Image (cartoon, rainbow, N blue to C red; front, side, top):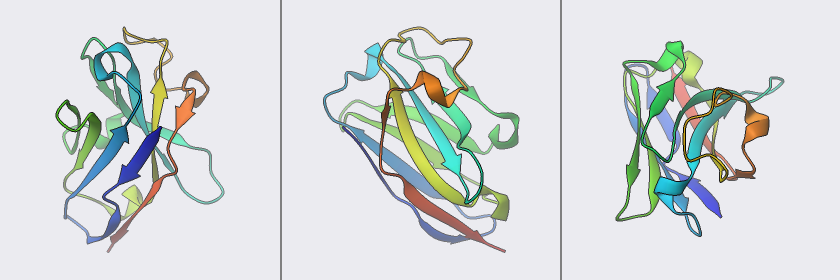
Length: 125
């Protein structure tokens, strides 16, 4: 089960920390991704962390967002800094349990078998 939390309303330039509680998953055996969806559009990848620790991000969030693993909480963290209005959306955590190593297809939503319910992030201008 994946459960996201930490969303909310923030001003431009602010920060939010999203937490994906990953019960029943072993963090270093799976790839976990963060996705964003806005109404009328498909879910788009933000980034992921593979079981082997490799992390990837889309260009639009590089230098602003950080994905990490919190073993104490068995959770995946998405730290978002310097937020922009275009970062607004529903953020989803997803797991690809077959991927210890980073796949070349890490950005494709269909590679992930398990999804959380999402948490809303709104960045006001």
